[in-house]
Length: 48
Image (cartoon, rainbow, N blue to C red; front, side, top):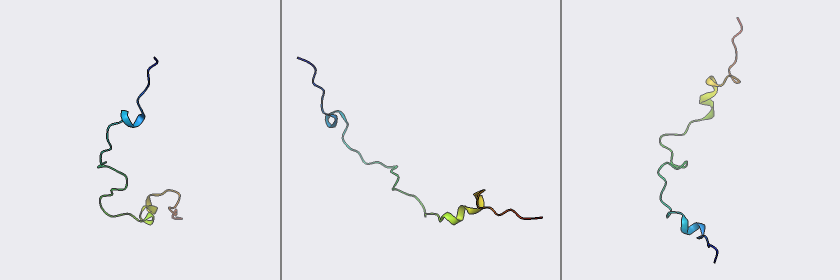
């Protein structure tokens, strides 16, 4: 008789809670405008 593999759900360990999930944010969110001075495409060069 050929081997019959277990179902994938039986192979995996039980689901555990993720501590570093991407939806868990520490601190406050940033506005995109805060990064404009660091973005070379949005920095306006000063004419001399």
